[in-house]
Length: 119
Image (cartoon, rainbow, N blue to C red; front, side):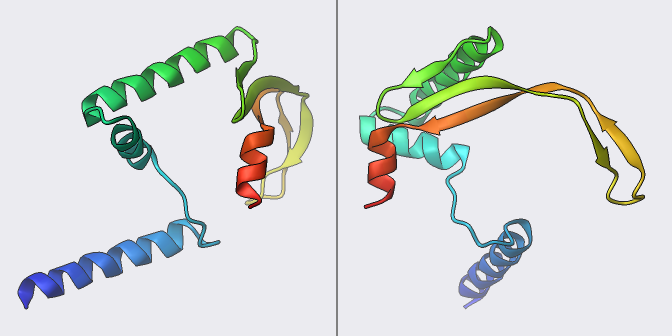
């Protein structure tokens, strides 16, 4: 009975946290879940899957920092675009502020991913 109650409390806290941190009730996969999925699909240990995942992220980040494109055929491509400087407003004070130019990462879904999502 106590264990069941503890599970209910933990589930309530999770749901409460989920609703407040995810107001649109979107379902998502976090890093740990993705690593678990990689380990399960490839039949390797979670530690090895984590190393593979971190290597992919590291290589992709280094490539993007150089201004080059990362293309994963069938999945999509990541590239860098420049966002120009602009004027904005501080939402708390309403004061006009200058937002500096910056580089942003852009993702374009590949044909296979777009097709799979729309099934």
